[in-house]
Length: 140
Image 1: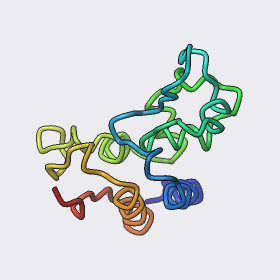
Image 2 (image 1 turned 180 degrees about the vertical axis):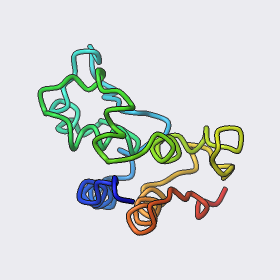
Image 3 (image 1 turned 90 degrees about the vertical axis):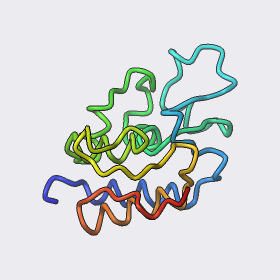
Image 4 (image 1 turned 90 degrees about the horizontal axis):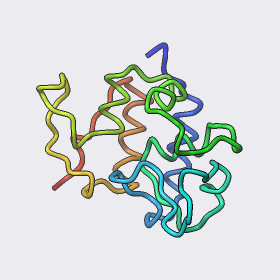
């Protein structure tokens, strides 16, 4: 657990706990639905647009990248680094619908559409406390 950025994971958890559930969607990394030019949207544009929607990774980018960075240029590796995650932890956290035994992770049978902010907060709590990503509490 030494590599985890507990401070940022806690900030992310608290942000998601207070977030309007309509702005959370594990199937969308980061999207401003009304944007005329998504490739030019900055992190600041995203954060201040009430229609923006993101998953755990997208919200991590929005919270911890420089506000002037273009959101679309962020990479998964950057997001994992921001949170102090290994590739395995980051993939299991951000892509639970892709996780499975063939990738070395438990098969939770979780679909992105099944995950709510409450589930994400609980998963982040487990990660903060144990160093392990665990989506097993998500009922489908």
